[in-house]
Length: 533
Image (cartoon, rainbow, N blue to C red; front, side, top):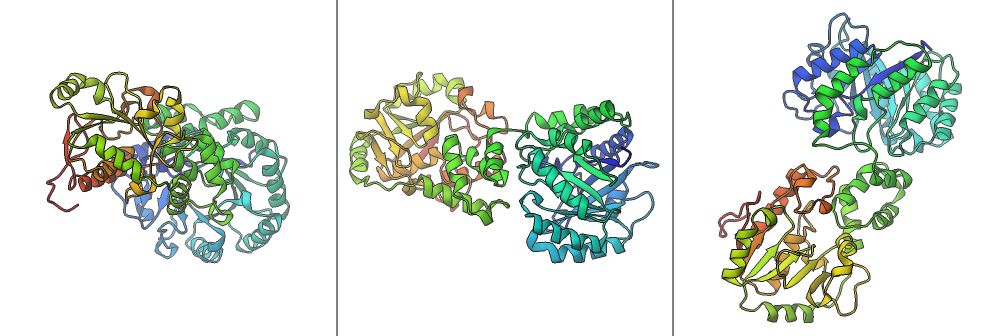
């Protein structure tokens, strides 16, 4: 089993979770501890032309990495160049030196193959061990894979990889591709495997690969605590311990557990990775996991609706995440045009001359209850709750914008006091319905923010004065975003800071048409209403 090698990719693949912001000394210590564990290959991060901040495992030069590599280590240290992601051109690499960075992992899509082989020659010429890693080999046909392997044999890299980018591989498909590669790849080229855990198969597939009989060198990728984008990766500590128990005691697991305890666990408290329903759906539909997480982060769709939308993604668009395509499909799915002129006219009459209190479900509606009650007593506003039924405050209307909240509150909804947007399925005939698409906002992350949609509706109803309560803004801890933990939804990969910014922009647009006053504290700020956005 000495032909087996393990490669830890925490600093590179795990970096998608924290934007690679581990900190310089943490990176140095992690590399040292991985080396102490006996891990054969340690991936240090990306070599890239992307802008970087100090302390990120994104590097502009090999020298930046070399200063972090522990002395007298028996591990091979490598970095990744990812074609299509503002990659570093290998012509900028300095020559490899003993004790420094020893290998380059080169990843590429099918349409980048010619560039990849050109880059590969340059990397080898600089003296680095070359790892060729095509994206998404699980989607290659046998003929396509054999054709690629024939070219790989001519290039003769250190290793060639099977990469389960979408996390769709069960053991049978993995072994089929392993056998095909093993029988066609030159004996001197090592065969690597990089998995994603969408189907919870990473550990199981690694075991199958370890049991596979071959004289060829094999490399299995893993990361501490499985840290990696989306569903994450094979856990380093698990697979090393398994190898020690089942084959030979060669690795020290404790240094990896120290990395997990000191550095990875604190990150996991605010940023999530690992198996989840959306990532399973992505794998089941052969889609990039970001499609499902993007839809789930909307907090508006049932699981069945997410599945329907994933099924609408064109085959040639599934492997790489296209945010604008997904947003287009989402809005098309949500939009059901209705004639709402009569409804808006009815609402206008009900709201005429009234101030309105918008009651959003932030935690502040609990902590500032007395202040809200005093305002209701003093101003006698028309009260509208946003996507929740309030049992603490008397509400004149419920504003309902998505299927998820509809299903959660279906048994308590009073349709005489409910304003529903037209995207919601199976509404009763007597429901007051307004056009969903007409209330959308011109932003990516806040296009269907329910609070902002309601403000647009209030403009249509010629309301002038609006009080805002419970519109707290989003934090990274989902439990702190709502007054009731049952409303908490994971953000997945949606940048909440950006979502807050976009909601703030929309809020200030409405502030030019409405007199907006916060009753409870908020992350959002209303600028001078005469200012431009």
